[in-house]
Length: 308
Image (cartoon, rainbow, N blue to C red):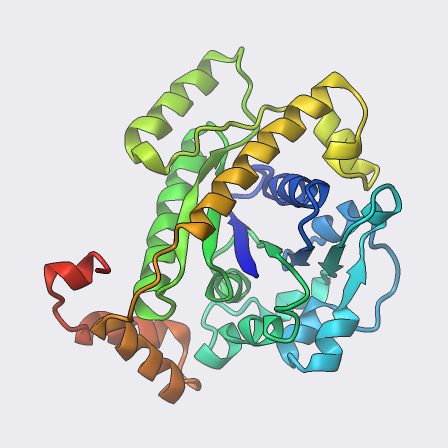
């Protein structure tokens, strides 16, 4: 099971749309897929057709990741009515806001990772839709993830938010979860005919180089239509929707290749130290742990710095 967080520290960039597009791509090719909705607006839950009252939600899972609670918080998406396969959602809740502490403890940010151990044999891919902030919910998602996909639109403020996201992911990777990495930067809501868009896209490519995913997601009305109807973009009729679906297929291929090329190696000294800290400092805030790791970090050899 591979876990991918879809994140941006700027709202309004279409982060949930990207998460649902990737879920559609995974479902369409037969991958057993789970979407975890940690955004308190719960748009991913709605887009997957999970509407109603639920006995447990992601908020309950983050409070107590016991086996029965985790399984009751996961429901089948209505997407499965049009196609056979597995596409589920851990339903979101506004009550998750109570877990979006700006200073979460280490124990708190580890709870989703604990929850996923209860279902790790049930899914091939888990996609987490995160809030547009760097507080407890986003960090909890990242701790449980193998990769973070950063969503950016071609605008100045998105470039600033992307910088912050990259630095935050790197800080968490060094201090707590060595397997975590940035999958790449996905440019979303592209308007090819807008000169400002072209300028910003070039700016992002010059700034981040190979971190920018080659595929770009254009802004099309078919995406909003499919999402509003709680339908997968791959099952939405029309030429436009199929072109967008093909773009999400390319991004999914990029992610799957990244998962399979992840090197298998022995932990470095710094990684072993991080694991030790995890065991003994569960009651400390995450920021305290990361600060201590930064202050007391051992100097690595060039080979260890490169992960060899």
